[in-house]
Amino acid sequence: MKFKDMPYERIDFNRAEQELKTLISQMQEAKSGEEQFALHQKFYKLNDRVQTQVTICSIRHTMDTTDTFYEEEQKYYDEQVPAYSNLCVAYQKTLYDSPFRSVLEEKIGPVAFKNMEIAMKSVSEEVIPLMQEENTLVTEYEKLLAGAQIDWDGEILNLSLLTPYLKNRDPQVREKACQKLNQFFESISDQLDELYDKLVKNRTQQAKMLGFAAYTPLGYLRMQRNCYGREEVENLRRQVKEVFVPFAESLYEKRRQRLGLEKMSYAQEQVYGPQGNPQPEKAPEEILAAGQKMYEELSAESREFFDFMMENELLDVFGRKTKAVGGYMTYLPDYKSPFIFANFNGTSGDVDVMTHECGHAFQGYLSAQDPIREHADIGMETAEIHSMSMEFFTEPWYRLFFDGEKAEDYTRMHLEDAVMFIPYGCMVDEFQHEIYDHPELTPAQRKEVWKRLEKVYKPHLSYDGLSFFEAGGFWQKQHHIYSFPLYYIDYVIAQLCAFEYKAWMDRDYRAAWESYLKLCRLSASKFHTELLKEAGIASPFQDGVIGKIVQNLRMIV
Image (cartoon, rainbow, N blue to C red; front, top):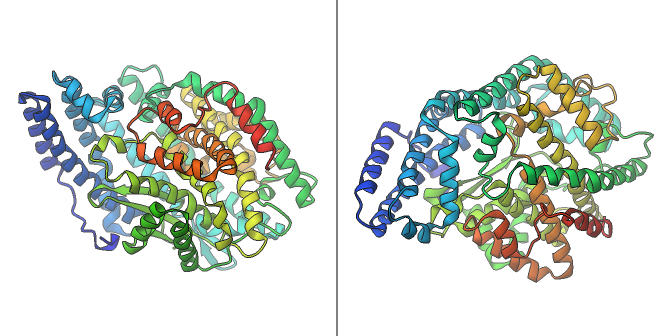
């Protein structure tokens, strides 16, 4: 079914609550594991219906943030979903404590039961009001950024539409765009500080009400980290500081020389060479058509996937002034349909959408036939492997998006940018750990933490007079920090795994692709570390793996 034709009906949570309570009662009275599993399949149908309608609302709200109907619907879900989620956990407890658990575990797997245990620790009735408030604050932040109105020579731009100017080949245009960006964030600085202060205090209070000393351990549970913890993440960051930061800095130095600059400033570091970044120079419709040809040629599975996406109009990628910023992939379970949201803006980022978000969607499409819904509950560190690896698997088709030598330039730039991302991703993660370890910090002190970490992870960086960013405010434009706490390290873990796929496909493309398909189909049926082992990928948590990745990259970057 086409997305535009999917009917929307507000979920009646009173009715959903009664259905869940009935299921809980029936589960408690069931006489066998088979009977309980049959009831559990009814839960799948109920939860899929709820998630589908909530997701349709969310998509349509981000498609047009000025649509008052879906704005009000989103507010409704911000208030109602936490209580529903808490009741789902109560339902899951009946599975977890079932006298027939061995039968159920055989059917849905041990990962599901570990995730249930995590869920039971991370929510309770008493924190629901705080979760509702948290949702409202996040929505307020996202609307604040989506409402940017930046005057560019008489044209009003939002943040997405400003991006091409931030990466323009003309350094004066880039500097002007950075000044505009700086001015916008300065204009909302107090609101950003107030929102984040409230979020930190809110999340810390939730943690303490649930018996945690600070938010971070609760945040790990809510990120569903079921087979590793803070110690492994800190060890990963340590190795990145030791081997990846020097490597990334050497690439920044090459870029500085390529650009003919005395120093590397923020306005310049986003540009690959003196001719600017390679641009696709194709209309949005042509980029979609090129994507269709790419996935048609890549494999039978990818051809079927992208045809489905196009036929059912499951991509909203054209930039509009009233759209939310950013991009994402989400999933509509009732229709077994992935959905991709993005903002094409004429930059190479448009091609990134066709590879990164389609990697997510491809995995969602492949795993849609799995009748065990818990297998779709993928940890983000695994989910991002699907997207970041697809960026590399599609390299042979970059020529469809770029003319002549620009395809080679984009390939080199893409790999270089991926390397440069690793230190930044770790910096975002370490920043959040410090903030939640010290929730008493003032807004000014938080910015000092960021400035200190920038010197560790990006020592070359200069903001060259951009006062908001020089004061340590860059992190406030990274919406994950507000909206998805402790998420960002998942990108780092996944990018490191994708580098392993890159090395593998350069040796044996077909074998690497078969491993990737296997990883996609395994979904969340096993723990993250087990999935990597099954696919033949080394875990970046292991000592020495990151050093080996850098050795491989030095030969090709």
